[in-house]
Amino acid sequence: MAIDLKQTAIDPDSPEIPPTRNTQKALREALDDLQGNILKSHGRDHSRHLFITFKTDTADQRKKAREWLAGMAAEDRATSALRQWEEAKAYRDFRELVRANGMSAKEADALVKSVSKTFVGVLLSADGYRALKLDAHRMPDDPSFAAGAKSRTKLLNDPESKNWEAPFQQQLHALVIVADDATDRLERFVKTLTDELTALGVTPYVETGTAMRLDKDGKEDPSAPVREHFGFVDGISQPLFYARDIDNARDRQGGIDRYDPSAPLDQVLVKDPGGDKSTGYGSYFVYRKLEQDVQGFRADEKVLAKSIASFAHPKKPDPTPEDVALAGAYMVGRFQDGTPVVDRNAAGLGDQPNNFSFDGDVDGVRCPFQAHVRKTNPRGDKQRQFGVPLTQERTQRIVRRGISYGKVTLDPQPSDGKVGLLFLCAQSSIADQFEFIQAAWANYQDFLTPGSGLDPVIGTLPHGTSRDSAVAQPWPKRYGSHNQLDFSKPQDPNPPGFPTPMPHTFPQRVGQWTTMRGGEYFFVPSLSALKAFGAAGES
Image (cartoon, rainbow, N blue to C red):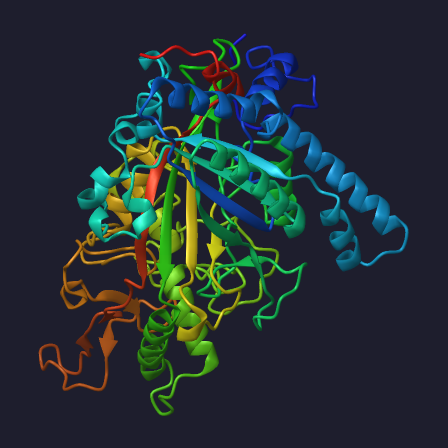
């Protein structure tokens, strides 16, 4: 039977399902047909993204391509959500076992990762569905997916597709994600797939991703949290679907009473028209290669810190390390260790807290309205500012599944080559979720308030527009202060001695240090749909 996509906090191991929701049997059957990395990240530290353009000139070429895709599911190569769930359980149990035998946490992690399994995911573009001439009723109907990423550049202020990196300029049919903690095992499997594709006359383009587990000083540490190249702990706040993950957020991330991270299944899942009528579900994925200019970001951070210092301690205006850290936190919305700037003006909370809202900062004097995490997840601001129901705001969240590319360092030099993020996100509607967040929030200079400017991390002006034409974003003169009086200027004589009113923010233009270098929109089909491709007729 089909499952209820409105359910939150699913637990495949519990038979205690409310009668109005999904039975354990129905849930496990759906998860066994659903691909992994949707409801929960695959969690591996190394990945290869194989972009495939099949030979499709003849019926025989198309048939072989469809059969190869079917084999990815029929041979149990592609990882189901249920298998991912079971492997994660076995991973945790084995880790506890080796820890019980006296191993340190670092030693235990290394041993457990060495015996973990390879994750494989298979995604198709709309061009892929069309080029393989799959029956029209098998193709998902999201309008943005059908149009493809190349057609959405103006909406998203992206560079024109002719300026993308060459591999992304061509028509892409499929993406295979292979991820593992053991790089030797990962490379062997990638070679196997590459050899198979070569036999079909196809040479895949490969992007390499690495989770940067670095401590606060930038040194590699397998037990450290994952950071992105600007230096900030990444992936803290995600919509959560499993009861276990929600419980962990309640226990380890400060609770869930101020911000509830749970989400219903329909946040990311839709019926797969090509899959089993009862168990077939899939998800839309946005893929974007985002190059990060770390030197530019750091320069903006220091300039902003200098202004912060001039207001915080004008007699000693040189910015301190604390000023620089606060400048970065204003830009991102969190300090580098994950501490929310809305909660305090210095790092140090630890445990990657996520139980916060902006209810106590309606004027943006602690966390600026333009800060990345506030722009992309307003946490009730839309309800307060525009009367939009909180339930609607929550439906626009995306599920991020990205990974960094380039040299593993927080201080990349020009000789190190390009660095950035292989951005991936899952959703049930590309237009209503990713595109809305990027275009109407991150890029819109009057969201959340008029003149708040671009998101300093991912916001961009229309391609070809000068950075100097962007709105200078407003930043707090003093953390948490609403003081609007200036006693240093001549006073208005009426009334006598009344100090001159002044704004509690100062304007400064920062941002646009992330550039989109190429991408595509994909659908993650159910395993039953993939298997059916092998016998599918042409439309």
